[in-house]
Image (cartoon, rainbow, N blue to C red; front, side):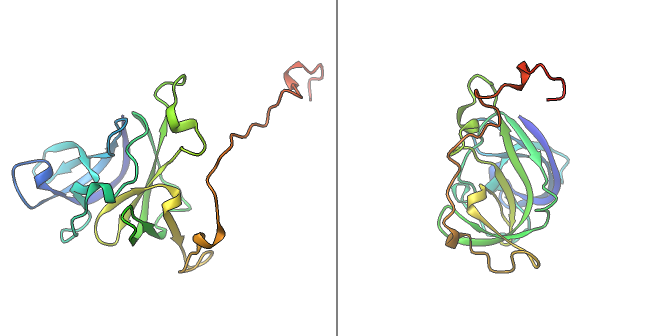
Length: 197
């Protein structure tokens, strides 16, 4: 249920982890994924305390970050107890605009991606269903918060290929609906009598 992430220098909003108000400086260094719960973070606090399962809305990337509600920082809870964290080289430090659940668009920067493996191969849930499967790109929002968003809620920018004004809305893309397989019942190479088939 835990996975390492690239270290994030941050501040934790203390009302989520103590009886105190204000912020404490910290480093987020891992995530915690529990099925049907919000993504949580492991943090090392300035006090020397290690606190786990700190939710998205309790973490700020700058001390003057505006406060946002959890349900406006992520569309989905975790899909399993088996997260996989990956930093895509191509997306590293890519700028984007994030389409937030409340309909606003916020600028941000790619940090890393969380994906999920099935906890039970016999009962994969939505993970193996093409139109339901989601990964979570974790984005450092310019307003100082962290969001976890699926691919269809982010438009990427760059100075070379896309430019500053992405337009995915104009393209009428649709979600994946099919499972594709290269193997079929009309051919079976495993029964060939030729070694180099």
